[in-house]
Amino acid sequence: MLLIKTGGPAMAEEWRGYFAEFRPSMRTASFDAPEATPEEAEYALCWEPPPGWLASLPRLRAIFSIGAGVDHITLDPTWPRHLPLVRMGGEETGQRMGEYVAWACLSLLRNARHFALNQAVARWEYEPGEFTARDRTVGIMGLGTLGVACVPMLRGLGFPVRGWTRSPKRVEGVETFAGPAGLDEFLAGTQILVCLLPATPETNGIVDARLLAQLPRGAAVVNAARGAHVVLSDLIAVLDSGHLAGAVLDAFEPEPLAADSPVWSHPKVTITPHVASIARRRERARFVTDAIADFEAGKPLPNLYDPVRGY
Ligand code: NAP
Ligand code: GLV
Image (tube, rainbow, N blue to C red; front, side, top):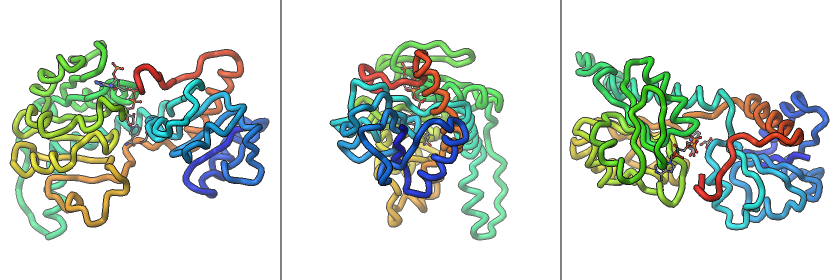
């Protein structure tokens, strides 16, 4: 049996419909439904599982995260660490993140926020933009599954791309930097900084005043990862100082961003409500079904969380 903990009963039913389509023999239930018998659960698919819930499933064999990030699971100190934890994958997750990051970089390049503000007040102001994509290097912090998926789209638009990772990494067409020793040089040559890191103790609050000051004047920031990566008050101060030109932010801490937050109306900030890469549920159900089939055939699970690295 697969137990599903997601955004409410209607969503759980939608997920169940897809699993019934892809693997009719697999029993599924919403985690809080009467037919959800904890002792029969072999798999759990979840977003923000209630603390202690995963540990209460005695026959659990694997945990699937509804998203690519698993911080919403690992922050429960009781989560069963001996079990495989699968991060959401599949072609669509990468495609959507690539689209979002390409859109955000083009928006910053062409000053879309400025035109949106002008349109709201019917102001015709000629501003053709100073740069082309070829003049603005995109620096991606985190060249994992999603960071790498962004590369061909950005390069296809003409942006030179560089990347920063924890361990040294080679990615075709990308100038790479690694670890704390490589960070300063990476930042110095980055005009659009894209955060695609996982949320870990090392990356919490990494985009702070000190880091932002190392970007060249006129640079911009895209955060498509987690709100905890960015010290929002530092970012706003650096935008207001004139050092940074703009930001596109998809993730906040906490979410939703408070209705009275001044960030909503900041003239240099574009906000999206954590939608950078949310693959369709049917595609995610297909990924989970295929992974379970492989697992039961003795093949390795894809996209596994590594408890040693912490992501
Ligand atoms: P991933 O495959 O685990 O890749 C993580 C990358 O970050 C790797 O390149 C890793 O370096 C690097 N990294 C980790 N810790 C680091 C550190 N301390 N210093 C430097 N680099 C570090 O993750 P992913 O699948 O690409 O996803 C990234 C994140 O995107 C997720 O964790 C999630 O938070 C976020 N996300 C957001 C949305 C949204 O809609 N907003 C959707 C999906 C995912 P190595 O290559 O050396 O391991
Ligand atoms: C969304 O934020 C995800 O982690 O997939």
